[in-house]
Length: 141
Image 1 (cartoon, rainbow, N blue to C red):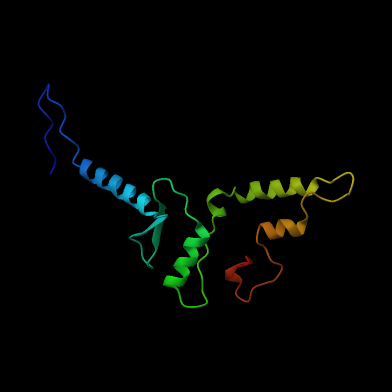
Image 2: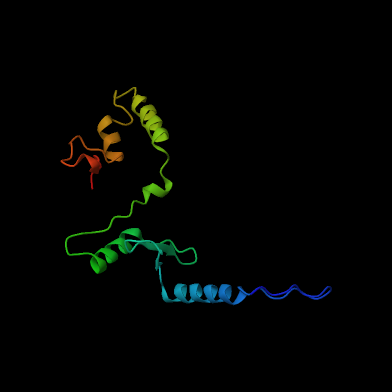
């Protein structure tokens, strides 16, 4: 139900969401005080997906969080990997152009490339092998 506007000359009515905003602020302050690094929330999507968010600007240790999640939620011997590069990584064309430029730079003293093909392949996590299931691609785990 929508609240009618305030009469002329009167201050506007407080936002109905003010209490929720204050609750969220207080919760985040409590989390910071207690040392909480991340919050896992249900994503409202199928397959039990979770949203992971930081608390109040804290930068979580992704390896620590993923290791804890792996030990808690997965069968023994399996793990979760967070591809943190995916958030900041340039598009494939830009990465290819950068690799091409770096491979073309040669040290005049040693004659070595700034970046070799093997180093490019390692940086892109590419492998020479053909997987048994081609739908999986050629990325190394």
